[in-house]
Amino acid sequence: MIIISGRLVVDPDDRDAYLQDCAGAVEQARAASGCLDFVLGADLVDAGRINVYERWESEEALEAFRGSGPEEEQTVAIRDAEVLRYHVSGVGPA
Image (cartoon, rainbow, N blue to C red; front, top):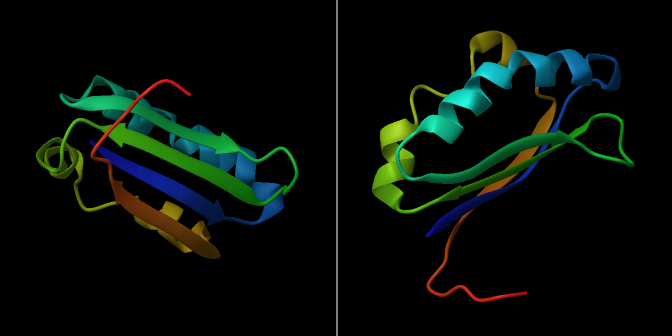
């Protein structure tokens, strides 16, 4: 299993519009083969932060979904980012 987790930072005044522009990509990801979860969400404390969480069955499923990345308008809106890929070997109840 692969987990993608991290944060994007955009201008606080633009965050809601940025997230709305991502709705189609979230729908596509959730419908993709091998996608177990895909979330982009507004942070409750930091007005410019977007939390990223993705869970995929495999590296192959993730790579099959990945295209060229965010649209250019989205890329230029990102002021900072830290998004990491985690390879998970086991899962159990929390």
